[in-house]
Image (tube, rainbow, N blue to C red; front, side, top):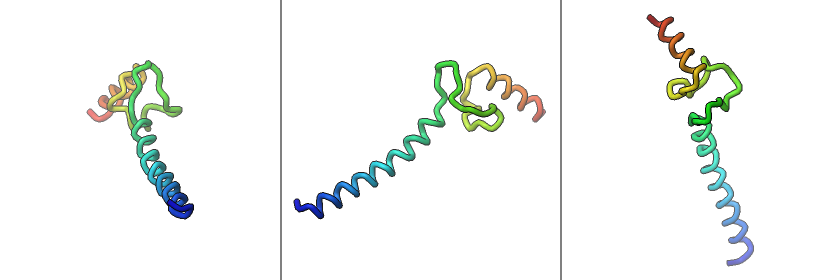
Length: 70
């Protein structure tokens, strides 16, 4: 393997790693952690994890939303 092929392989590997890393980050950010604390820095109403969240604040928000829909 000469230098040109090595550099091309490193660049391709880096690009592939970056392409796999970005979706992985987004998937882990959408998971609800069971530690009793929310990793999000905003209110429950705008959270994409609200349906799966079991924190007391999220449960109250879900009840509020269901009450408003009825």
